[in-house]
Length: 377
Image (cartoon, rainbow, N blue to C red; front, top):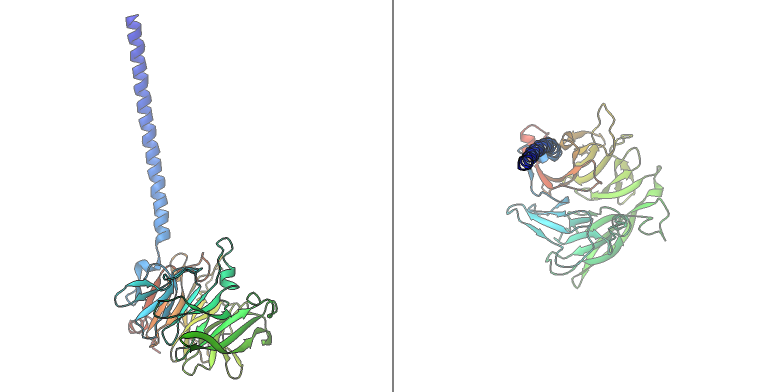
């Protein structure tokens, strides 16, 4: 019995050793497979994480790694931007690189636009309410205009007007322009109707209010249907407002004379998406988000970059960024400094909603011209 028991015990031990070895081999194989899969997955992640910001030319500098919709202070020393759509507003000092929040000192429901006024106060666009399960009304139908005092010691003051997408501000005075549509005022604006309005911000005992309001353009007076969005006052006399016409010939760059109401089409490129965003201080050029056309049709959101358009009726273009050549990225939402030397813009993705940004960058236009990359107009 002892020998038999010993044999059984030895066999069991041997079997257990075999099972243990087999388990080790299986674990090694599993780990090896996992390593292969992991390496493949990491390679995919690394490929996805390769961005235009990884290899910037010397005339482009990344100043933040988050944020969107940049705007220049009038002295060119700071850049204002939104953390995210329906988020807080921040300001970065270009000399110290310090980023400070400008809307943390009070509670709010998030903002979709922030622009410096001529006096240093900040024009905000944001809704009084926000529903994360249905966010779009807070951008398209419920957003209102507010003025935030530059002291950042008190909440903003509402101006009593809604605003569809982005407003425009004067570089010279407290004049602003904005767009409203049926979604903003369903009781007084017909369906599928867009209007551009203009007014002045006036302070009474230190409290801002909107005065001298007048309608500059009603979309129904145009010989075509479109969706309007106010973009910029055209310098130097600011007698014209540059605006976008979505859903017309793919999207055109147009201007409306404030005094006469005359509308001018500065692109007139059927089926070519073109959206003006920032304007040069001499008024001769505007930057434009423009689809990069190619021999192959695109799927989903189009590849897009920033171009410089002459506002002399020639339709002459010059390409400024090439972010769309890297993966799904693109350069969007440009803003030109008051001295015309620098362009702030954002890195965006073609697979995200328009306006969403992944960091603010600055292009030194003079340095780019000296490098022969762009012309020096």
